[in-house]
Length: 567
Image (cartoon, rainbow, N blue to C red):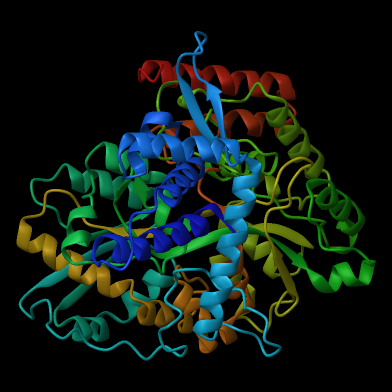
């Protein structure tokens, strides 16, 4: 179970206890559970527990709380550790025994809920569901219904988005969408770089030209910090909006500093695409590690016969920069000095030393050497490839493997003439020794531009909420958008029948394999990409050695961070 799912179960149990203990006379406060719950939650969140804070969380008189804390220490469930040289102050930590006991409890609780609501397989085993998703909704989602109260026929809702499948569907269906929303919908779609420029230019206007804007997840730090988009927490609370059905990675990736700025509409995960027929023919297993990727690329590379082992995104600039930082995550490290949080890294509290680049490390060197080794078995056009060119080469059957965003699988999933059609197996990014499988989550979320008047903001929210409903997301899938940010949409049989990739990505999120930390959404993200895209490209060309390229990257990014006053 992932950290987020454990936290959901903890919240569920605490909420149930609150009903019996505080809203009814059926039970009394249980200080033992309150201390355990507090300690486990803080552990999962990577936050410190002091004796004083644990006693306060017990919700009983101080003396009683201290006796319960002492009992838990004596039982080996809590560990007391000095947090100063004087030894006069201490921190409390759940022991391995307590963590294992709680995880066992959580699994049993999940199984009980699964049995109660029928989440079982044919042989009576508990099916793989995510605790807290909207699985109680009808399994087959209906066609989108019209809003009960429309936005207003005299209004025009302008939406700015990318030239990508979901927004292509919306653009082609403007009249129908307008009828469903009771208004006029107007879509403006732009290429990625121009989209970012237009969002920033619009923020400088006295009155926003757009009612909603779509942002790429790594932009969230800049857009939020510079006040370009509006926080949604207040309106979500007013509307009692429940976001628990969203995939955690995509929803969390739409927040900054613990404030929610968007709702996912078109998330996408970068995976390794493998031609299963070619692997079977060569007697190779699908790669799970970086060494296996390199070995498979070497074995399958037959350039003289029109087949490359792999096609890589090595185009100078942004494409290669993304390739580097996403591959760095395969070696277990983010591009900057983020604080570890269990198996992940903390994106909620990025400050000071967290902004320091990490390109003088062993993981960075191994990443650079891996990319250099792959170059020998890569398609000849890899050095000029971007996302479209890369997927086009793979779709034409000219490469046995490629890394690719899940949403771009439609290029061959929906094209029966593609040599890759029906012959591709998808796996999370293969990992290096000592690391775990982590696939970057990307794609787009919808946000409300900052500075809208209250009435216009309410209209924007109404359309935003409608466009990200489960049945709307299903509609996008059935129109060629092979992605879903909601568990309920992914569970729909018609959605699952459209492509295997949707259920596979759904499972990856449940297992915690989709993460936003490989592309940390800091305001300087674009600057970091610019540096990497230049220096690493020179390394692949042979102009720079690995040491020189990484040294240049470290120094240039360090200078940017110092100039911004980060440390």
